Image (cartoon, rainbow, N blue to C red; front, side):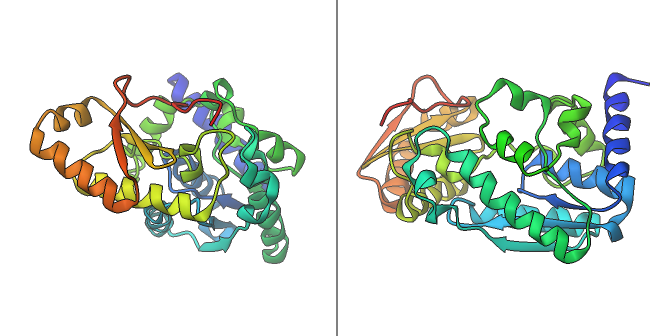
Length: 269
């Protein structure tokens, strides 16, 4: 048995121990694989997939969550989260994710009790330990478990499991919440989130795949992958990008020569 399959077996055992669960489904590949393994371990009848909806969730993420739940035959509920009503979340001091996860996991714990389900699980993985993830503290405090993390599964292994399960998001690029595009120290507001979402949606329509629109007031700083850089070599495409991002609400558009990378925002506004 390969290491990947050994880790999968660990995750399956951990899920089986739950008896029944609410699975936090974000629209990304990690939570999709978690749901697929939960179906394998418990069966769809003992599961509820739940997605938190707020201004920080792009519409495409909600669509992908619904697609995954349908593919796996699991009941899916969309719950409204109000992290933007929390002053500490809006202040964006570097621990924003803590308050977002507190909001989501508190709601999902209540949902689990209402539906008679025993646990809440979410899709953290081993790679997340190398990143700044204050939301993991909220999960620990609220008793929400991460079977993929406990099994030691990394992103490459998760993607392999997603392909094996024929999940529609198997090759989907990582896409954290829209608030992650706003620099620490700059307030998170619905208007800023909406502007970012419009700009990123416009770039996807133009054929860009893995990128970020980093928000700096009236300036949009575009982080592009290699394919994106290849696209903007063409002057006509650059002009289309500028027009699209400006229509979304920005005045200035810049391309970051360092390209797309995780955590590509400064720690000061």
